Length: 352
Image 1 (spheres, helix red, strand yellow):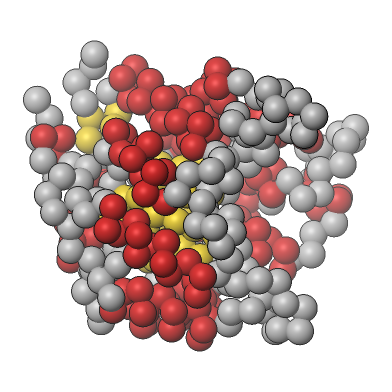
Image 2: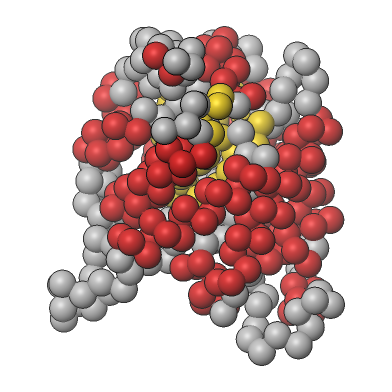
């Protein structure tokens, strides 16, 4: 095993104990504002590509890096401490839908570099900015059958997931990610494949980055799609010793509160993250969702005032306006207290 190389993100635990950190908002929502055409997604490089690519947001890191850079900078200007790479669907498994699996590594590398450049531009000694390498769930599930007539059927294997995530992690770290964020987890087995790949990469490279693990509660049952409660989900992934465990997306901040409360009770020695979406779609709203920046920030302020969270931000439907509002209301509030035991806090804080 190689000696462990600790990254610039080892400053994060102290920051999270001192104040609440702000994660950025939705990448897809911001991309939609540009109303890009098929030709604009393709750019010159993919002008003659044989399959439609409109909607492949990760491709824009290659064809329209200016747009991705501008979105990162808008969130940083709004007060974000961490920005996610444009890589939610940048795995070979997800990109296979566009016949672009062979571009997955390049997408991750380019996306991480764009986020790194933006964070470096906005970082100051008093307010460092961090790149969160985003690993999405993929459009396939290792735990649930895609065929109601065949409960044993699966459309992806653990090994396929592991290999896809390993390639993604390798490129994200090479591109400058400070943190790895496994997010929108609806299937714990998919997440375990990502964790396995991450640990494999750490062992091979000697590089060790902090992890944020974020599940998503799919309905009022309080369970993720593969059937676990929030507490059971935590106990399934706690072996990875993440910097933070949390929830994202779901049905908006208002309906997420009891599950964040449950998670905070279940994981007293780990930081808690929460980045809800902007509520349910509402075409009558100016933002297209139920929750305006004012509503979302008020609800998240309640989480913070209750001492539930250390990292907050926004998911689907949220914008720099949401992030600025969240930043403004939580800045005066104290972060959730945690017991010792978080990533870097004890034995991993000092390389052997």
